[in-house]
Amino acid sequence: MPLHGTGALKRLALDTAEHSPAPLGVHLDHSRDLDEITACLEVSHTSVMVDGSHLPFAENIALTKDAVRRARAHGAWVEGELGALPGDEDVSVWSPGWDAVRDPALKVVGRLSPDAEGGTA
Image: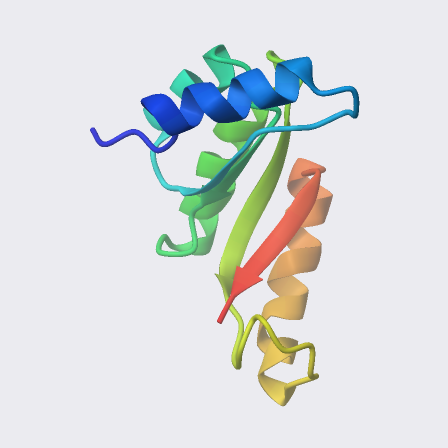
């Protein structure tokens, strides 16, 4: 299992956040692996992004619920990946294809109360 945030870079990020005079967080981005999410939470990551966009909707909900449960036990927040949005995620322009993810997004919010929802292009 490849873990993001392992090794020297992880230690640097966590040490910097811990000793900063400003409040800083350390985030795990786009993980599909609950063991990886748990490992990062156990070493003080303040947020994680669980990416279930490759799964059928019901399985994505189940994966995200499990990630939320694990993160809340560590005082961390979760961003859930609902699916792919059309276009370029670095350009904020409305696209008609976004309508296709609006209803599932509202279902996720109703079922999970996640801290944030994400979409990728």
